[in-house]
Length: 276
Image (cartoon, rainbow, N blue to C red; front, top):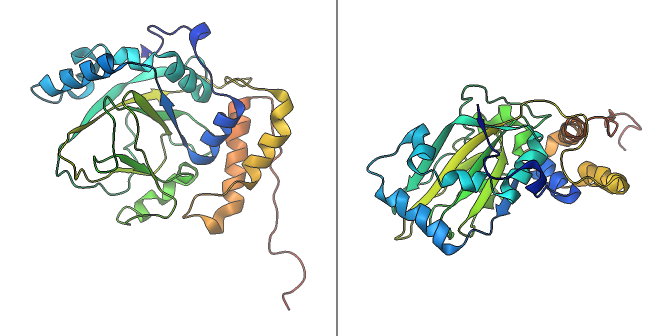
């Protein structure tokens, strides 16, 4: 195991607030914008350009400055908020180099590498993707479908589908880190620009279950948060499974919050008067 707290201590972490955490539960992702300057991001980009080959899992050893990305207070704080304060960096990581002309990918989930665990009612593993350059819409940005982390078993059924109405295209600023639940359906889009697009993907795991919220929790906001979890629009491909989606959101909250729980209720939507 490799610690993710190289330069950011627990005290320095900038934790997610309640709204951000609930958005993560509902959508399955968050974009963290760091304050690294142009010199830092350009330095990473130039080092990537100079690599004679893809170092695979050795990308951190090839470019040690990447460790500063994942120990940045905002990034470390977001990771601690969704995985608990003792999360750890998994040994697998990868540098994606999308050259001009690279075609789009099919919708997919990453393979269950090693100890990466699929769980639609918890957050046990996440992907964290760093972009060292601005990513415009024509540069092959990452696309994802919000809410699909709650239905990972359906991913193989939509692999060859095209665009979805509610998909997100992650056009981001240099230095941004896209953090996603391990089970969000995602894909690289086509690079129709004249520029190379780099994305460096690291994986992080939960080490232990929490007994209290690990984000910046405000108890007085609980009622409003519970209402949002229960009523927010859902994943675009799961309208018929709205009850299951709500239930899994609530269970995810309960798992993340420890003893601060919302009730999970079963509602028989077919019971009642016969239709006229």
